[in-house]
Length: 195
Image (tube, rainbow, N blue to C red; front, side, top):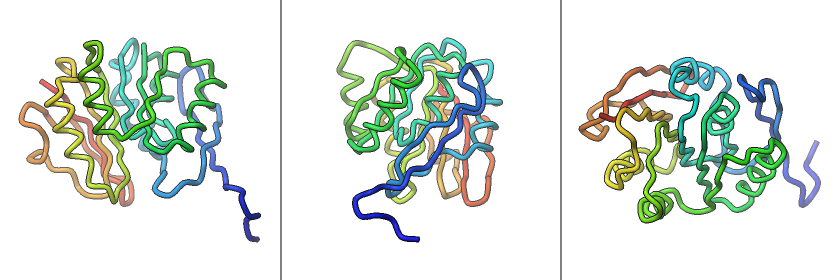
């Protein structure tokens, strides 16, 4: 059955754990928008469980906000979401309102420009960063380098990477260590640490 003219299909995202466990949120069916899958998020937050409580997090290519919302649900102190698409960001903003997430900030702009802005603003650094850019963008490693160049990572920060290509430690900034990596279907994902 076809879609009525002017209506966008909605998809749903489920928060897996924490205070908002099993909460379902809608997000738009936008080109290139694919939330981190439940089983990948479950593995990621098993890896991060000791670090996420009271962490300051950055969800750089936020989209649906799946990783950042999961972090807030599990006790993160704050999450800064960055999303380039105004229409996708509007839905994320609404979901943050529904959840009364007053410890979240949403920047509607290009990810690399947002890193420059964050570096120029009041000095802050992050404990956990989620990097899940659109697969066809080739932005993953430029974002890694920009995080390092702008000094936006605390010592020992954890960085989650997701890609449709195998992730190589040689492509990471020199002071990052690849802690864990897995594959789920065509999705490659890894957890790194900044030293």
